[in-house]
Structures are given as C-alpha cells and as structure tokens.
Image (cartoon, rainbow, N blue to C red; front, side, top):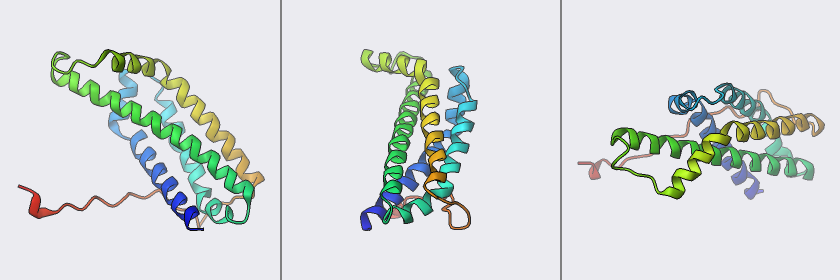
Length: 170
C-alpha cells in the first residue's frame, strides 16, 4: 500500500510539473516562434485537468481493483512521455536563449544536439497529438472502471518552494 501512495504522489507531482510547464510563457513563446500549434498546449492542459479529477479515486481503488491499477500504469506511461517531451522543449528553449545571448557564436551546439533538436522541432506537434490521443483514450476508460471525480479529487497545487539556507548566501 505504501508503494501505491508513493506512486500516486509521484504521478501528482508529474502532473503539476507538466501543467506548469505547458502554461509557461516560455513554452507558449517557443510554440509561436516555431509556428507550432498553440492549441495543442491548451488541449493538453484541459486533458490533464480531466484526468487529474479522478486521480485520487483511482489511487484509492487500485489497491482492490487490478484493472484500475493497470489503468494508472498506462496513465503513468503517457505522463512520463509528456514529461520527456516537455524536457526536450525546455532544453531547446535554453539552447535558443544561449544562442541569442551570444549571437550564436559562443555557444555552438554539438552537431548531434543540433540534429536532435531540428528533428524535435519537426515532430513536436505529432508527438503532442499522440500524447493527447493516448490521454483521451485513458479518460474514456475511467467510466468503464467506475472512477469518479468531484469533491475528493486532488486539485493541482503548487509544490513548496525549496528552502534556502541563508547562511550560505553571500
């Protein structure tokens, strides 16, 4: 039972992390700058909110229901995939900022990295659509499994800010 609670906390924190990143101005600006479909960000946000509504119920029911446990495992896979895509987007944003700061001269990307991100640029919309399709399918299954949202659902909440030891700040 402790493993399920830890897994649920991990999944909730991943939801929060992805939610914050897809709504950040840097990611929205990246999508606009690359002429990508900004509507996908909004759809991803709404879809994640829809899944999040039943997350608490699923975490409770997985202990007694193997099908719900499998549903949560499938959800975790899709959320990990979404998190990985957001990591790649954020890395591309950081590289772009570095190149802009130094005029593209001082921070030359390694060839392999440049090739990777040109490929990422071309497939972000497709990968986001795949993730959304998977999430939509998972959401449809919640009714079959009897998962309910509502008052007991866990709202997306901000994680506490890291504590800073003031004595080491100069």
